Image (tube, rainbow, N blue to C red; front, side, top):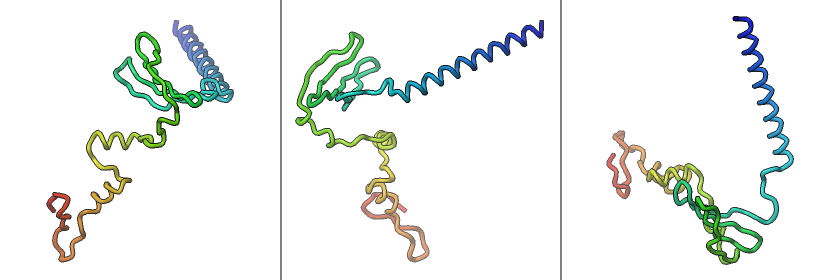
Length: 140
């Protein structure tokens, strides 16, 4: 009974390894062929999640931008505007650390505000404790 069980386990793991290897090869091939990538003059330029199942999207097609709502009932076009009427470069994309810092209310380290906050304590000149900048509201 032990030998047949071991053979069954080996056969199962070999089959699993073959299936995983085949899936990996198919995914690599699809990536090289560009399957799943956007082609043509279509681009997603904005997204606003409303809740877990609803969102509003800005989709740029050529020189037009369509405002599309997505929900349980599918997609619905709710408006359109010319691409020249919307300044897409005005709002840079936020990084994860920027969003997290904004939510937590802490300044980012790579901004001027963050550099000023971290360098506001002046080194001691008289051998005592560092003195704080009087404008920052902190005590030494």
